[in-house]
Image (cartoon, rainbow, N blue to C red; front, top):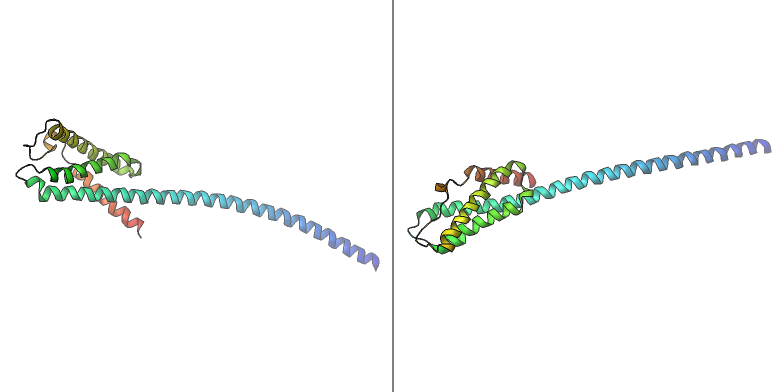
Length: 180
């Protein structure tokens, strides 16, 4: 009996030893796979978070452009195109500041714009550059306050209405996607 017991015990110890070795290798393999999965998940999560931040920043940028474009549109519809004489406060506080603000937003945040708006942004920047140059020439350098309004459309730089439409549509689209 003692020999049988020794064989059983020996067999049990050998089996336990091999089981422990196999369990150890499976455990290490599982740890490696978990580590790979974790790295891939973190990379995907980082990419998704980065895209979310870009969309959030883009919506914020487009929202500011949207408001200032509306401000300009209302200013032209309500007063600027109808004034009888030069109104410095109205021109400086509404037209000049909105033109500068939109231009600066687009130049400083072009990296946040969707690619389909880049050409339209360039058209807006060009229009505002020309308007600001003409404003500077007429109001600052020439000190001409007899000219009641500054327009650059007759100079070949009409306001890019398609750009305005595209910016506003893109803002609404991205805002709705972001806030679903």
